[in-house]
Length: 239
Image (cartoon, rainbow, N blue to C red; front, side, top):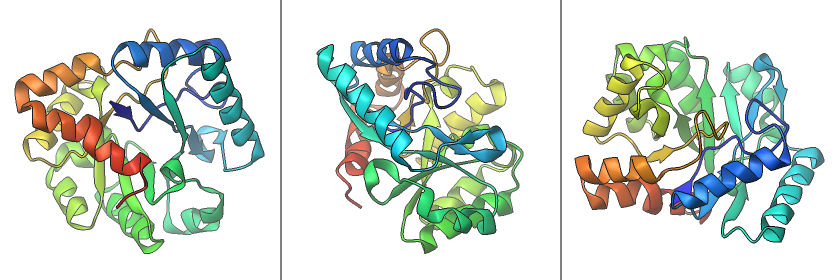
């Protein structure tokens, strides 16, 4: 499996705090069947995370890759970023400081949880205009999508891809988020399921259990599409 959304890079956001924490999360992921992981630290100044694409992030990434190799953990790491979209103006000011997933065309973006439907659709259009494929992180957690599932359908028509969190399906983010995630799956609007891993003990990195759940409820081919086939397009930088 390939996990496209994690907060495993140590000491840069609200995820892994230390190198040891990061290695624990990576081992947990591998034990659950994950073989490739995209590291997506928050780039969200409004939340206090100023992780723009610079040499400091590169150093952190290289350090973690070296540690994984030294520990002989069978996993491939890829660089990425989760960008908070606030407005078109703010986004375009920093466009050259963002880093798409694996340096390719897929762009992982999140929104404020109380963002409007108009803001969501504007963000999708803005990212598309810059030549990227927008990947919307955890849409099931946004109030506008919880209230109107058709927003996701409209976003899909505009070219967005949708990634739901495994933790939403388990009820970690509340009944409404769980119901919305299930509805999006039933509508076949979900392109990826990711861990959005933060800590081993809470919102961990293992995908094995949720993959088995998807296999049981939606079939093996659907599970393969969500955890392998679609993510492989991202790490392979294919459209």
